[in-house]
Image 1 (cartoon, rainbow, N blue to C red):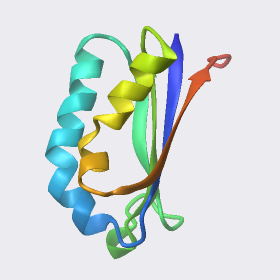
Image 2: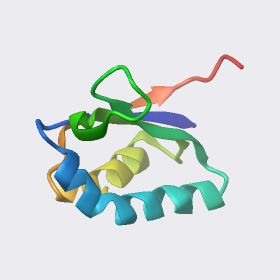
Image 3: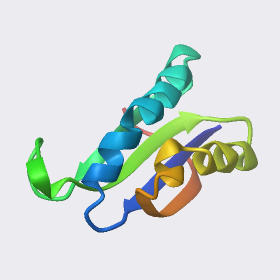
Image 4: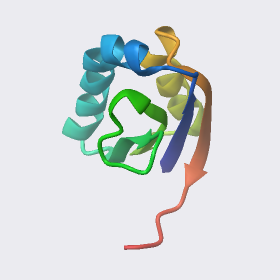
Amino acid sequence: MLYAVISEDVENSLPLRKTARPAHLARLEALKSRGRLILAGPCPAIDANDPGAAGFSGSIVIAEFDSLEAAQSWADADPYVEAGVYRSVSVKPFKKVLP
């Protein structure tokens, strides 16, 4: 089943993101290589593709997991969590309708 991992950043998270980004991306690449990643990306803090120093306000990942517990466990182990990037992380079942 698909699950949405919706994360909200702490204030001024950009330096923390930069430090933990390689490990964070490696985990996403692992999901992708197993065909389980639907989409992933950050939410710019301002209305721009490249927010520069404004950074990001959070992230969204939609991926396939065996259960809600497995999705939550994966989200809890994110390097951004360990680095203190996220203020909160919510994991919810997701049903893709379109496209």
